[in-house]
Image (cartoon, rainbow, N blue to C red; front, side, top):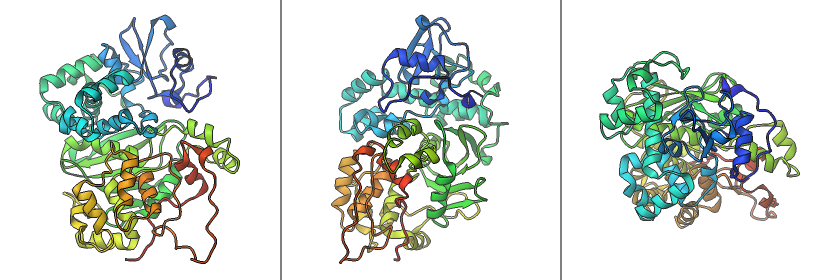
Length: 487
């Protein structure tokens, strides 16, 4: 498969997105998978758009047009390539780094906000008018919020068509389309086939279609090397009984957890072992309209849209880090599947978190093995002596941790909550908000408090690590999980 092809020589990665077309064409000529998702190229003579690593014969430069997003290519009338599946690439790491309105908007659209609340809902969350959001997204991405959401719906629909036996009508609404006609028109425009013809294909490699009860099988693509063992070590260490579990032996483990989603509940599982540049997953949902949201939460949890090449380029030149970066390629900075849950657990600690699950947790629609509870919603913990103030702030919206939250504002709001220390706020910013540029300090919820009479610990100069300080913390072994505080 094209994911396993080794790229030929190409200009080194930089920390900035690739902006010039000559460098883009070099990446296409070398079939460089490092750039998949960073941009797309379309061939005017065929009417098809592809990912940079497409294994097809490289087109002539004069016939190629570049686009920042799949939605932009689709908006110009290009169809998705059948060989390289450009709609299934990792997302651009740029959206994790950027804290401006465009980056926040892309994260919210990925979470399904436009499908649930429309463009006015997206604009309201960002604090801008719909016209301003439309203008900024179109200027930078070549597509507005409706087009970006449409491209996402098309990918979700293809996934369901090719992995489940659901009726086409159910798939149309589960993918977020307003009507079956809109669904049919979009599938024809994006894939140049009818939904029935698309279903008949077997190009996803996901195996035979399954009944909904078996869950939706997925391949969650990532860019470059992936240190899966370290991610699963962290998830196993912080797994909360009844809500999460990691089963199996190292190298062949499976992570499972329950999810509270906008329309219902879910249980997800992700395998450590992989045959390529993806993680195999399966998602069981009570309401299929939650599929897009569930997928993006898993992507954030496993940090699948990171750019390990850019991280290694910067941190690999820093004294004290270079050897670690060379020895451990693909280290990730995991996020979380439930931001509000993580924030509350950061204050409660492991033991008390387990107790509140027992007392206040609710069962998912269908239990699975040891997964018997959903973590309590913030409104259910407003009276807790430790987590109560934060739970109230989350419940009334004075602290926002959704994918489009302004990270600086969120941190300021967190620090205004009684009981939230700077260390806890930094940890929440790193994990719950997915900030790649946080170096957490010593947090009482993670380690024992220092001796009051001791000298303050030496703090390294972390400016040389920007914008990847969260990854530096992982290389240095700084604790990034809620610790064993007693209740």
